[in-house]
Length: 341
Ligand SMILES: Nc1ncnc2c1ncn2[C@@H]1O[C@H](COP(=O)(O)OP(=O)(O)OP(=O)(O)O)[C@@H](O)[C@H]1O
Ligand SMILES: [Mg+2]
Image (cartoon, rainbow, N blue to C red; front, side, top):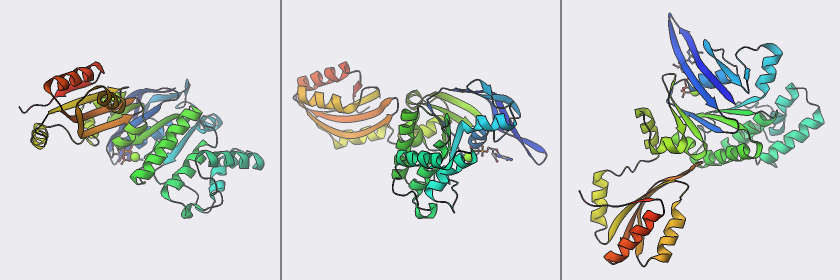
């Protein structure tokens, strides 16, 4: 468990003090994937550097499993820092070393014998899906492969916490998703706590359990990913959520849809949590003699379940449509008939 208490970091900028991290209180549970999102300059990197002791706080404390890392020094701090690993946006690999040598590097520093290093590196190469590329140099790898090396190297010393600073920001969307899948896999397999900072809500949505929103050095909103997506409170959080729920159902789009689909009934379904759209639609079609067309869909899957909306056109007799609506409402999805207002 990671506990931040009234954590503050000021930098001297000329004559003024700049508060990069401002009285942050936060508890991150063991084994959780915790996301921190904020715009550039919000203080995310400073916060993460305070977490691994690279930066000393101006005031407040950081404790990891009860040990206050802000108070320890020397060999004790080095040991504590081995339990916390990090991956970076630009990978920070050693360019003159092969994949295998990069992964062995932290083990070399820790004084692990050669044979053991090679064995551990082989396991890690397998884990991150780089088998066959052991002897390649970083320059010969794609961005996604480089980050896989970064992840393997970060795992070499069997850390308890993995910090990710914009680890997918230099990657294309498809490669980003593959790396995020790998992080989820590692979190599940090794029970590793992951703290991830990003400015992309997609990353939060896809893999995080909880999220903190940072603005001006402060945590302005905190909660379960699903709750935050469903009911963002702060303006900044709403803007981040809007990054992935663009088709807001404004009156105009509804009006347009009603013009485009003048027959039958348009029904908007709102899904939250465990219920996903597919089984419900399949059942609806199997058990009701209505015609179902998907008009618009905006479903996002999070680690905590799905959420989003789906607009269906239902065609049939009034009675059949009413029965279909009653069925949908029994399924714990909100179903609402769209009308022109
Ligand atoms: N070593 C430093 N000296 C002076 N100011 C600093 C230092 N490090 C960070 N800052 C300032 O602290 C604030 C927060 O910076 P930080 O790098 O933590 O933001 P960030 O959220 O990671 O931004 P980005 O998304 O651009 O990486 C910024 O105003 C930055 O200029
Ligand atoms: Mg940063």
